Image (cartoon, rainbow, N blue to C red):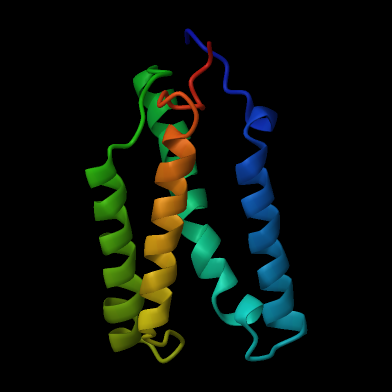
Length: 128
């Protein structure tokens, strides 16, 4: 492979991962109806999923320059929203449908798109 994946270089996604783990801790050990317990995980899950998807696609294609387009990000948000807010609640009582979650997914997708293109307009994840 022509490039090395530098995981520690992408500190913002490590931070998102830690925030997600913290929200799981809150959900299981300190349940409440607070924003951090209900919606914070939904805000950070899309950037985490998209980031890991890009890493996997880069590895499988041996293409260190692959990035998601705005349309791909939009489709991913729609797909995850459809699954977690319509399909899963229909088949299981474990899931509840909440349209504020969909808003959080879209905000997370926007954050990922902004992070991907911030600065010079070139994706910051590409090894130089």
